[in-house]
Structure formats: C-alpha cells, structure tokens
Amino acid sequence: QARQALGGFGHTSLRRAMFPGLRGKTRRICRGSQRHLPAVLPVRKAAPVTSAWPWSSYHNSESLRVDASLCRGPQSRGLSAAAPVEEPPEASEELLPEPPTSEQLRMLWIASALPFVGFGFLDNFLMILSGDLIDATLCVRFSLSTMAAAAIGNTISDAAGIFSGGVVEGVARKFGVEEPPLSNEQRKLPSTKYSQYSGQLVGILVGCILGCCPLLWIDPYEGERLKHEKERYEVLQTVINKVGDMLQAEAAFLMMKDESRDDLASASQTPNLPKNFRWSLSDGFIGHVTSTGQFVNIIDAQEETLYRPHLHDNLLGSGIRVNSLLCMPIFTKGKVRGVIALINKANGSWFSQKDEDILSAVCSHISVAMSDDKHNFDEIIETCEQSMTTSGAAEWSRSARRIANNLYLPALEGIRTVLGAEAVTLMLVDQTNQDLYTE
Image (cartoon, rainbow, N blue to C red; front, side):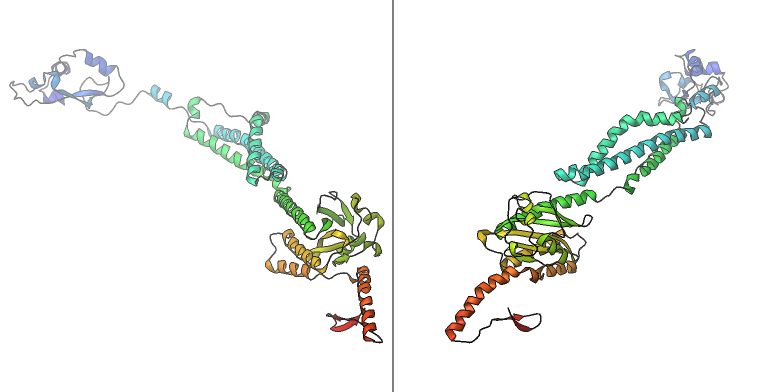
C-alpha cells in the first residue's frame, strides 16, 4: 500500500527513503523477533513541501512515528498491515501442557480425600473425649467454663494430629492410594487443583462426622451436673453450719437418700462429725423419719423405743452422746429426698416448737435448691407447703408427754386444793376432730 502511494518504488528504495539512518538494521529487527514490531507511518510537518516527490517530506527520520500494524515478522518483506503471524507450533506445545486424564484426576481426588478422612476423624474424636474428661474434672475442680474445656481439648487433638500425619498417609499408601505422576505444569492447571481441593474438602467433612461418634455414649450433661453438685454442696455446707449455730445445736448434718443402695449418704455436716458416712433406713430415729416422712423432736433419746446404744451413745465415732434430737425430712416431687438432723440442744435443754418452725422453713428452701431447673412454680409451692405442714410423729413423743405431766399434775393438784374441788381436769383442743380431749 505504501509502495502504491509513493509511485511504485521497490521495498529497498522505500526502506532507505523512510529509514535513512537504519539501513540494514531494519531487516534484522523484523526477522529476529516473534513479537509485533512497530512500523513507520509518515507524519507530515507543518512546513510546506518543496519537493515534487511526495516522499521527500519523509526523508527526515525525526518526523516518523511508530504504529504496530505495518511490520509483522520475517514472512513478509513489505510493510504490510496484514493479520498477526501465528506462533510456531513448537512454542504453543511448550506453553500449554497436556491436561491430566479423567483417570488421573479421579486418582488424585481419592488420594487427596482419604488422608483427610483420617485427620478429621482423629481431630474430632480426640477433641470430644479429652474435652469431656477435662470438663468433668479440671473444670469442676477449678470452676472453669465448658468453653475452656473445649479449647484445651482442641489443643490436645491438634497436637496429636501433628504426630499422626505421617501415620495416616502411610496407611493410605499401604492400601495403594497414591497420587498419580503429574508434572509441575499439570499440577497448576485449574482442573487439577479443583480435584485436589474438592477431595480434601469431602475427606475432612466425612472424617469430622465420623469423629463425632463419642457423642453416642458419653453423657453431655455430666460436667454441668458435677458443677451444680459442687455449688450445691458448698451452699448446703454453709446452711448446715448456720442452722446449727442459730438453733444452738451441738452437731448438725444433712443426709441424702441413695436409691441405688437404699440408704442415706452424708451430704454436709458440722466440723465435729466425720465425712462420707452412711445410715441405714431401718436404724434409729433418722431411718424412721426417712421411711414415714414425719419429723421427730426427741427430748430424751434414752427413753424412746428406737434408741440404739451403738448408734446414739457415740454418734458416728465422734464422741457425741445423743440426748435431744430434732430431725425433719426434705421433700422433692412429693417424695422424701433427704433429712436434716440437729443433735443436742445447748445447755441440756430441748428443741422448741419455734425451732421446729425454723427448721421446717430451712427444709423447704433446701427442697427448692435441690430441685432441677425444670421445676415450675406450682411444684415449688407444693414442696414448700408440704415441708411447712409436716406433722410430728406422735408415737415418739413419750418423753414430751412425761415432761408435760410433771408440769401439769402439780398445777392441777394445787388448783384442786385451793378451790376445794373434788376433781380437776385439763382439756386440750383437737383441731383435726374438732373436739376436746384430755391427757
């Protein structure tokens, strides 16, 4: 096109006319590179053209500017604006590696997935077991949260995963699971990376799901239950000490009913009594209160039919001899759950009705504290009402009647003598039968 525009000059004449300073260098530049080299386009100067030849105005090389459409490569000797020359097939084969086959991609997916199944299984399995153990021991002992147990368990499982990495991969190779031979260029292809990453993702998901199997047999609420029991024990220990001091008892203790062994186990006690003792449901006054659900207020234990020298003369090996005793049941959901016993009123006296009312209120609050969180308000009120209206066991109040007779009879004899009456009687009101009775 340029030759036609310049009057049919040949290629050499045209190059010399347009590139006077380059001469033979242009050919080496165009032939020595596969890239698109800039061609030369004429740029007219503002000065008027004095020569009759149209190409005389282009003789100065400073008036030229570059365009990438007129010089392509060694296949063309003319300044043509033809399409870019395609690169040789040899160069194309080196830049684009052969993609992996479907069989290679499948083997790569399996080889990537199986080790991660083992990693995911060990990670979740060890984390759940160690976290549950820590939650039931260290967290209870040092009052740590469940999240702390999970963090420590995760740390243990991660540390174990570092040492087990080679084992998992070795087991996979033993079963013939290995990655196919791929070149570095093939591993960089999107299809290869997709197969590798998707296999790892599926493997870790399957392994983590299988690693949750300890949840099938462990108790997920054991840690929380032990924490509540520890807090409850601390509260009850404080209550027993306060009640013993408030009612001026020589000793006090709280016992809970053990359904599996059908006896009573100590829950808290004053410091002058031993720890972790048990009591049979058929022994003494405490066993009677647990069996019947009625409280007893004993003034002189030695005069009662349930007095047992081996139990009451040396209470639990503490050196305390039982004289007076106040024992009340603790109800939960309508059943006797435990008992509170106060031993020996101070100064040789006995426990009064006011002491009974105070201990009954304490038993009511302990019943609510021992109930679970699912107790509704009606059940709590019913438990409190049952604790507050618990009646005494009349058959175990002979000593109280003897004391009353020692007080009443001299007074009645004095009244009869002073008034000159033939007989005098004291009648009491029976609220249950709505009548009067005499003792």
